[in-house]
Length: 144
Image (cartoon, rainbow, N blue to C red; front, side):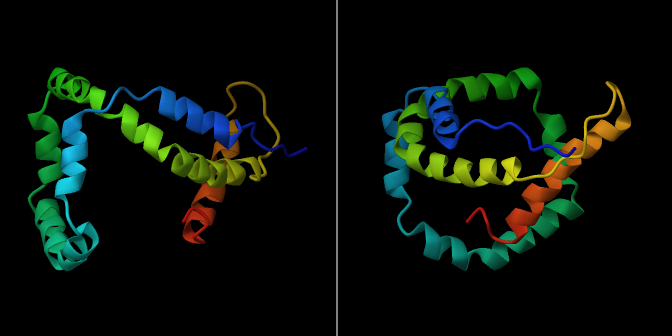
C-alpha cells in the first residue's frame, strides 16, 4: 500500500529554522537600508544578467571559482558571517512558516510506492515520488 511521507508541522520547521540562526549585526541592517529600489534596479539589469551568465558559462567560470577557494577558506568566511542571521530569521519567521507549510503539504500529499527490502534500488522510487510531486507543485506555482 502506498504511503505518504512523515513531515513536521510548518510551525515546528519555522521555529527550528529561526532558532538555528545566529545573532544579526548592525551591518546587515545598514546594507538592507542602502539598497534603495532593488526591484526596479534589478529588473533593469536583466539583459546584463543574461549576458554575464552566458559569458560565465563560456569561460567555465563556475568550475574555476570552485577550484579557487579551499574548504577552510569558505568555512572561515562563512563562520565569520554567522552572527548576521538571527534577527533576520526572527523577522522572517512568519514568511518561513508560510513557505514551509506549502512545501511540507506538498511532501505530505506525495504518494510513495511501498517500501522494498532494505538496500533495494526500488526504494529510490519513494524519493523520486516526493521530488516529482515537489517539482510539479513548483511548476504549477504552488510555492509562490
